Length: 121
Image (cartoon, rainbow, N blue to C red; front, side, top):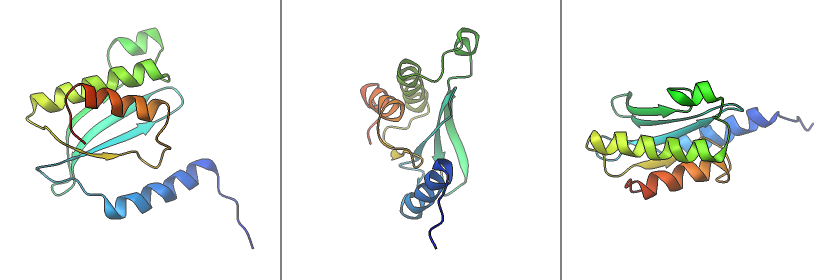
């Protein structure tokens, strides 16, 4: 019998499959991306300690007032912001975790902006 999963359930399955192989360390932490309809979030995580080292999201600061968080421009800004915060913390290179999302649109824009700001993947 074929059981149909919702889009979010399928994304969760893909994300768990990716996470089996992907681990962030102290030398090279994991840059995790989560996107909702209205916002996008990025965290740099050390999986060995289970600690979030740096984070940035579109619902912090001025983006909330303007109501723009669910578009490519906001994703580029968040990618740039998380890369700057990571560099301030002494993090130069990360492992990119797309969170089960297709590498396209906002996820790709965030990753490209983080690379341009100086993070190495």
